[in-house]
Amino acid sequence: MLAAPCGVRGQAVAPPAGAAPGVPLMATAAQRSAAVLMTRGLASIKARRLARGIPIDRGIDPNETGIIGDEFTPLTTSLSEAAAKRTSANPAFAAVVARYFEQAGLVPGDVVAVGGSGSLPAFVLAALCAARALDLEPVVIYSIGSSMYGANIPGFTFVDMLAGLRADGVLPYELAAVAPGGERDSGRGVLFDEDGTALVDEARRSGLPLVEGRTLAERVQRRLRIYERSARGKPIRCFVNVGGASANFGDTAASLDLPNGLVLRAPHAPESPTRGLVFEFLTRGVPVVHLLFVKGLARDNGLPYDPVPLPAVTLPRAVERQAPEPRAGASP
Image 1 (spheres, rainbow, N blue to C red):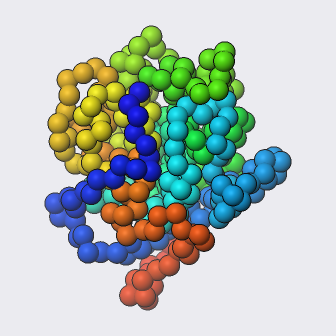
Image 2: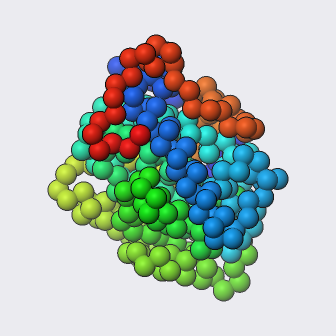
């Protein structure tokens, strides 16, 4: 697995053709709806965490979002920065992802494949809130493995968070499958797991279909088949990569050069069978939303890094005066 610290490397992305780079966040009803929905999602996650008796360490999570994990647990696979995880919990990132979806030309009913990692659960939440706001159909495969301060608390991974979000009526989605994550998506490579079974055991505890395979190349192909089967004959219009799970991000040097944010064309697609789903989709002409390097994503979208408190979700006055009524059946 390539080491890609989520808080460090950040590469600016040129706006795609036809995009309006000067348009601020919250300039569309969908962007605002996504941010408001993520705010509700964080409140749900916090309440359910506390109800389970899992305390929130204000030294790590001063904004008390509830989505920040511990430093080291049996599910921790790599090092990371707490500041990056705190930054990712800004609900404005849901508006960022909604804007990427709009720039990619997605329309209601489009299928979006999401490859989520425990390292950045707030970005998985942001992607799902953006999908809900735009009436998209996300198909999510989630990797249990997490870097420090991610969804690394056994019994309270994003699997559990999403179940709570469904029960609270915030999001209607279920996971299509889970994978252990870790080294080459095998479940190995956990920092403090002497038996080497913690990630696989946690994945099996979910009761969801488990992505298996003898090699990383097999696991990449099995994920592709799960996405295609779950799309029920509809084309996949976008792939969202959250974090650095090997099957999604790949294990070639080209992965480290992949631009942050919305990517419409592969800058250089390696031929390796372990190049990851980001390149599998790009070579098929499917846009990719790449959410990994938090500091770069914050900078490129005009968001603060490690803010305390988190900025309130605001709406530009010009948009506020003209904001349409919510669609029937849509989440607020």
